[in-house]
Length: 428
Image 1 (cartoon, rainbow, N blue to C red):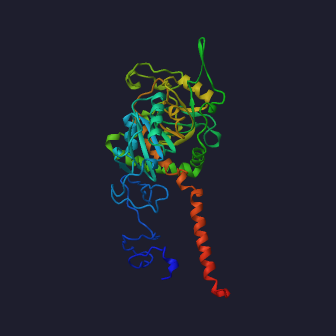
Image 2: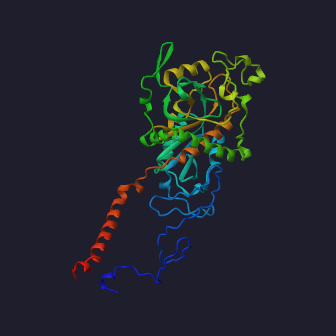
Image 3: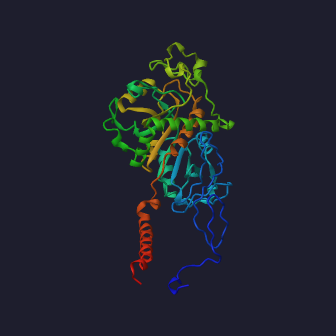
């Protein structure tokens, strides 16, 4: 051995190359990367619509992704490698989300920042390490507090998804196929293109004047990464992919009897005329005898189409529960919102954010809680389908970080080629 090679680390045994398709023998003293095909095992939550398997998330730059063979085959990732936060209110919504985790980490593994009162669940969804923040109550103030503490405890989070239920505007003129009316039924899912604080405005003598000019200037649009994701998902291919994945994940949720994720039925989806108010108080339309002659015909329901659709648009957010169909229509005309919820505006300033909500009522006086469990399930299924298309641009995985290594590799190869060609050129 030449003296110039003294800096090379020698292996105790010679390394034999494996034939393609064969399994390499373990070597504890030295490990060379292999490129043979790895067959992953099925994760704990199975995806009945996909023939591919879910891989275990790994920190950037940690090498090839191993297979998940057992629930404890890999230790939990470092706290800074959790890049996705999910925020929701009420246990029934959190139950639907955790039911779609591919793996659950022991949350006691992670520390919290000083004075963080939040409670978290951690695990994996697809390729992502995620933290679910359980809100102690509803409303924008609670959501803002939870989001701020979550950001302090998990500084690696790159995207927050607010998941839950909402009231919806049943028709959006000019947003359907061919410029027709877009129809929204209960169980559909709304994905935010922006959040509008509908309580933002001026209280004048005898009236409240909402600030409606440049509503997106109040909180701003989603960041560029989120907008690019939405642009992909809004296309025909993206919508079809979401719909197909959601059907499969809904089958998983329906298999969990405790979630109550069963479709209530077309007969339970009732939309009354906007000017017709509920005639009772704290009792159902059936018990108080609401006039079904005031029901609005629904083309999708008449066709027996019970599969949830995904809609993209503005979501109104505030602490006020909308239970007036006439006010619903006024707000929709003024701001362009297609749904109303209570948490998104609180999270929006803490994280790059998406709001994904299932339609559980029509924001009118006839609203009830009969659709909440199903709507929470459709929102959770849509969330998991959306996240399959999100690939975070992590600083540790950027091309700039790889440039020094790439240049060194190119330099070494060039030097080797030049040296190997010297004898042929007569230089010795």
